[in-house]
Image 1 (cartoon, helix red, strand yellow):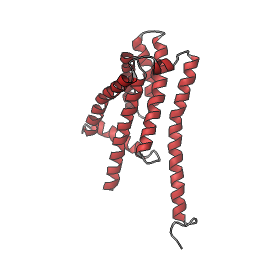
Image 2: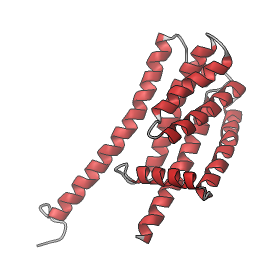
Image 3: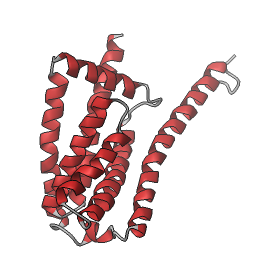
Image 4: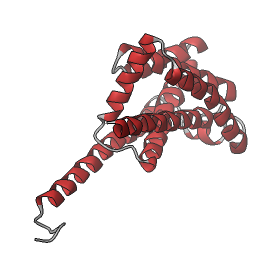
Amino acid sequence: MSNGAPNDPSTNRSMFSKYTEERTFATILSFGCVIIGVAYILSLLLEVPLAPQLLDMGPPYSIAIVYGIAVTIPMVVLLKAFMNSTYPPFLRFREDQIEFISRLGFKLTSSRILLISLVAGIGEELLFRGVFQTYLSNQGPLLLSIIIPNILFGLLHARTIAYALIAGAAGCYFGIVFVLTGSLIVPILAHALYDFVALAIARREIEQRQVKV
């Protein structure tokens, strides 16, 4: 009997496992794409054009990219401090996050991390900053236009209370960045870059633990 033959049970299991992994990844990525679609539909219903926020407002693209990288740095510094902290509540939260990511159902390759980060950065910023924050800023106080969308943003990430609070705070940060720069490109880039770094760190932690086992 030859190894890897079509009827080899081990080969069939491997193919099924790979199919399941790809399907799980596609499902998660599709959710992010749905958010992009929802943002576009709501922008039409609420009469909040997204194109000017991406193309015409704020600094030139080259400067917006520099800003996006710059505003990501403080978040990455905080993330590194969090990963190195021995404070018990931080330790528990960190372990919970690593455990959750390790059970997503697919391996975190570089290409998958990049796609997830891009889709999340684009979709969530279009919806929460581009649509909700812009719409509310035209209706009332600027402060409320930043806070209210990020209550929803935190609830979207409410796997745990701690994670919801952290996500809400991050959303407020992106909201302030949007106001100060006037460009939606900057928070999109910062969001995507931060997610990429965070997932890359999570992948490294997962791989190191697998080696130890």
